[in-house]
Image (cartoon, rainbow over the protein chains, first blue to last red):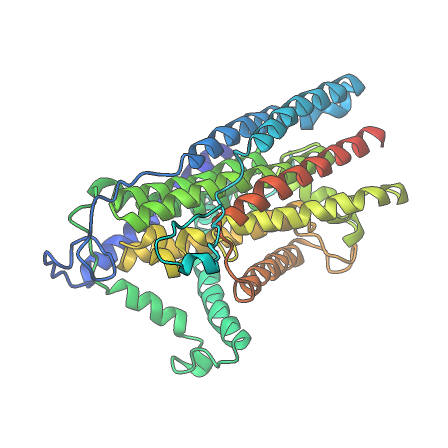
Length: 139
Length: 350
């Protein structure tokens, strides 16, 4: 007798086994002639320049932090959503307070501009730019 | 508890029955992936006024089979610079994550592989595993494009997970259950009882319909972003990142990424069908209702959603990163919260 969660676990196992079988089948059929050029990092045929560990925009980090707050909030709301009808208006108003506090934080992040990605600003050339010796200014 | 699985009734809960239950969706996924790949090729061709594949088999219907055979015999290249263990592990993670979600998909009133009470929550949690596979693949490839694609993919996925979660939460509020089978059962009796139209109720539910309808669209948009489909395909944007996180993958490992993408498309379509479009219920009340018709309706509705995804892919251009973040955080997120509050108020007043 296997429980319902046991079947869920078997799904994970079967998924991995299926990939394993596909890999082994491919391994038996496919050719293998590696050489250093083929195995080098692919950059459209050029020899790779520099390290791949490049610096990232800090906004990825901010987005992850904000997401974490909302995700925790969803985790709190899920059990509430199941039973709030029985708990009545008290639980409903509690939840509204909770969401309002969260939204205050969200509005703060919004106003601070942390949700804005840098937009590419096109530089429009002006007549003065053509004058030799004049410094280019980009307001 | 009544049985929600015809295999248990037929064979009992023994080894044979369990094997059938866990492998039935696998055959379905394999078949579905072949059909979806062909549909993608043919629909893209029609949209661009081409014929599409015509040479493999009559009307090109064997093209997906030919592609699988081709990928099977392609040489597998593991870059010298890559981190071997993670590089090889990523296809396992990504496909296992996609397939595990099938464990709770209610295909029919008589077939749901695992009838667990946390069904919807489980699907929501499992959805994040594919992101882990993407990061793992992108990071381990040790390639600039892969890493950029992986980072973008994760930031996109977490941005759109909140609106999707709010849509799911609203349905939990309406149905007071996270069991996929109970949610489907609650929507029986005709299309006006589906949660897209506010769920079962009297005419007083009319003012909540705009919110549930809006959430359906929000969930659909968020699901496009979670499966990295156009217009949210900046993680693999061909014109700037070669192929994004799977640039370095070839042969069968690439096939697994590809396959997982199609499996994920079906999973999000199936969840959308279950929570908003009535699951396996017939649109016409008791007409054409039953276990077999149920699976017919479920698969039909999910395929229509998948066709919408394909249609959108070949119609819209790609978003820029800033536009993507704008839509996710400043449009969909506040809207989904408003809809969620309105729906909880509706349930409270009912």
